[in-house]
Structure formats: C-alpha cells, structure tokens
Length: 355
Ligand code: 8YV
Image (cartoon, rainbow, N blue to C red; front, top):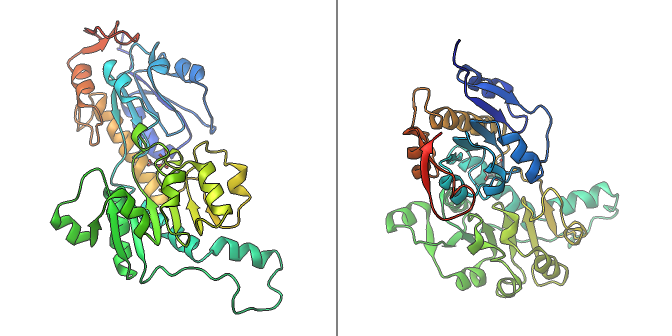
C-alpha cells in the first residue's frame, strides 16, 4: 500500500491557485471561509496535522500544539510573528517561518499614505464633503500640516522603516530614527536618516511612524508619558501592531489637543476598534491593509507555501526554508528527532524522540 502523504492545512481562504501547489506534496485541506478560532478549535485543527499555513489571526502556542504530535512546520503569512510562540514551537521541534522582504515596499507605501492622509486630514475632509458641509468655501477650513520640510521620526528601522526613510527623502523631509541597534554609517547615509534616542525621537518628530516588531518590550511603548513628550502639533502613524500603543492614552491625547492626529492601520483588539478612537475626527483608520496589494499578498502566500514545502523536507529547497525563524527546531525535525514529551507538556526537561 502506498504511504500516505503528510497532512497540511491552510487556516484561511488565501489564493487557491498558489495554495494548490501544496497538493503536489501533501494531503491538503483548506478553509474556504474566513474564520476566527478559539484556542480549543485551533488545537483541534492542528492535532492531526504534519504542517500548517496560518495567518496573524491564528495564535499558536503551547496549548494549541499540545495534541499535535506530528506537527513539523508552521508557515506564517506575514512578516510579524507575534501570533506564534517561538519558544513553544522550538521546544516541540516545530519549524516556524514568516514572509519578510516581499511586503517591504508595499507596506512602506501604506505607511506613507497614512502619513499624508493624517497630516492633510484626507478622510476628515472627505467626510466633510460627503456630509454636505461644504456650503461656503472658507480659506481656513481643514488646515493640515506639511510633510515637506518637516521632521519624520521612525521608530523601528528594519526593512520597512528604511523603505519609508527613502520615500521621505523624496518628500524633502529630515529623517530621524530610533532602533534597538544603530544602523551602520553606510546604511544611514543610504537611507538618509540619523539615529537619536527615544525621547529625542518623540520630541523632534513632526510626524512619527511606528514600524517596530511587537514584543513584550514594545508593548504600550507609546503611552501617556511618551505622548506627552511629542509636539501637540505632531501626527502619529502605526503600521506595526496595535499593542505598541496604549490606545486609551492615544484617544485621550487626540481628544484633548495634545496630539494633532493619528493614522492607524493596526489595533490592539482588532478587528474590534475602540469606540473612543472611532468617535474622533482626527484619526485615519484602515483595517490592517499594510501589505494588501494584490501582487504583494500573492507573493506573501507564495513565500509561505515555499517555506512550508521546504520546512517539511521536500521540494527543491528541502530542509532550507527561505525564511526560517527557529533553526534549532528544523534541525530536530529533519534529523527525524524532535524535542517532545516532557518539554512539550510544559516541563523543563527535554527528551528527543522520533516524530
Ligand atoms: C499581513 C502584517 O497582512 O506581515 C505582517 O506582519 O501585518 C500583514 O502584512 C498579515 O500578517 C497577514 O497574516
């Protein structure tokens, strides 16, 4: 009898023609409806699998993989992977991958769109027009702030931050940034940005864009104190993760004239958006569309598919997924041994066994 193919699952409807490539190597199941999963539902879906292709909506940690004894790889469609508990996946010998690079320029474009829309109050202006308030033209209606000649602050200077800095140069902006580590002088010169401390970044920015990864260290890094250090005329754009901002503090600052405007593509409780933010006029809101151009979303799914095939040890890059997040797990998985048992169940002792 022929050996059965490894079982792979795709958690959300993506691009059928791209995802179908998985069927060449695996027994493939794809969700056909957009779904949100409870932890228990996810654990049930993962339990019989060898591999999974998931999105940021699926939070995968120790509880979700507890019964997934054969799971070897989880491919995330997204560069951010705060939905994955890498320690838990590595401890279980499960390879995790993400989709960097292919979305850099598209996400930088959206960052710039929000910078412009927020500074020039585009959505507020459109609502004003659609509401029939454009009765008599007034010279002082809907005055905004300039991008040209202003200082752009970038918090988080990875690939997307650098792509935004390059765009800012074309707009005649001065660019300052803060990051865990300073860029080399060559890269700083190339992107045209100067390193400053966190407080200086807040104080100097006419427009501040957040592009840092969401980790416990960056949770609510923009809080009441940070907002108080910004210019009351400044605008703030977030294209990273909602949890980086204390949204209650932000809504309060925006409502009370301590910050001019905000452009938000991501929210702490998304897809729910705080009523305090929805009630404000000086906020531009988009539903997490940073990477949402057709070409880029297709490229992200293609990279996730390539990652999954390679992480499962088949295809032309067998054993070498293009964007692996936890090399230790892959070594365990591909040598036929994976760290399971005691550690998988949350204890500290590890045993290596065949998967
Ligand atoms: C994705 C994102 O759309 O890549 C990321 O980190 O936030 C977005 O580009 C999202 O992750 C889809 O899963």
